[in-house]
Image: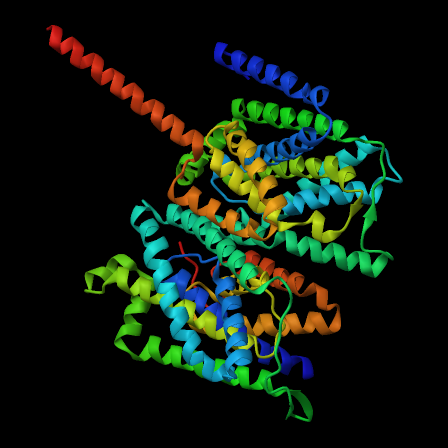
Length: 288
Length: 323
């Protein structure tokens, strides 16, 4: 029970990061391998806001999310849009965007190493116990989970209950047909990429309240987010949330029952199962 | 297999001459330049082995560090029990086995999964190795004591590089090479022509993985002390991708054009500005995507084609003027 709840609390932040990636890959068609660096950058900004200005990380989201939105919009417009225009087919865009976002990964990582150094950092925020079913958990974890649920709920409302959100989903399904019903595909893709970056940054800021972070850990989170996205089905919000839950719980299981050094092995175990049995995702339909 | 053509004979001769020339380096210098030579030769072997698979398939493999680390570990674990040449063979088998497993899981479906899977593979193998060692052995690191000097390592890497080239040459002339060219151009066409595309890709990936593992096994004595973070350093995978793509992967010798300058640049940067290596790697990726999509050799070939059409155009113009 203890493990289950810890896993669920962890999966809240995973879900946000994975939702960010699934928007970027599913709608903007950019496999953003620098996604984890957005998360780490948000960790550092939250840390800086809290230690230098005593701004509560939850309020800090109001600064971090719009900042990440603008930054990711700029990255998409400057670096990735030319690739989208140049690409003759989906495959070429895929390999070009993989290489370009590798560049982004290392550039951001290098800049953060220069700016903040390579050591591990953390800060104490709401580190008092909170009781659920007789066991106590860190209040910061509970608050981060609640915030993640609210943000994911807002995203769901936006995607499924508003006009703009429907446009985003339409582009995810078929960019060519979306164009025919007067949706500005290029703009929507840029918007989805920026929104994805903002979601990832929210995940990072929430993560930093209870997690020790350093400048070079982004790759691990990118990896986890990628696996969640594939497990849930690319562009699928429900799938991503469910997959994040499965990943969070199985990771906590392996870490507490076998060895904390094997979390990535647990992730990979799930990944292999998904590749072998449901490469199209949990809710995905088989494509011809 | 058909007989060797005039061009192929010339290429083989040129290759042999270059190998002899490169083998002379230890006679000239045993210090700084030899050590740089070892680095260059190591990446030459790694990048060419990488290109064997990733050149024709266009799949970006980031598994290099995993194969390389397994190679160094095979030597580290067995050096006290078995003779060295057998360890090289074991390294090759282990590398091929891992490549086979990864290939079987990912190469049957679209290429994106392959990239993602290899992205974290080195880290996964590192976690597994660390875990096994802390669980069943006393220490995390391994000592490798041999009589090998830099000269031996250099010459072995040179031999390996030559072997990779020879293998690539033979594959190119074989049914497998023909199949790979068709797959690279259009996979659907290849499938309809009756080519077992997944099997061809997996076999090629195994060959490439085996060579990379041997390269790791050869350089193991250089470290003396092997521990998981240095043996499975993910940077190796990224550097190999950059060097190979900078040079260009359409020809087997293309990566060499990237390896030599970039190894020297990285040596200088990691010595003088160790905090800036990530930034340089990032910028190198941008350079590949935006400036050199087909690598330096691709650009050179474009230039040659352009010059040829210009000369032809000039010729036509001259003929028209006469008439």
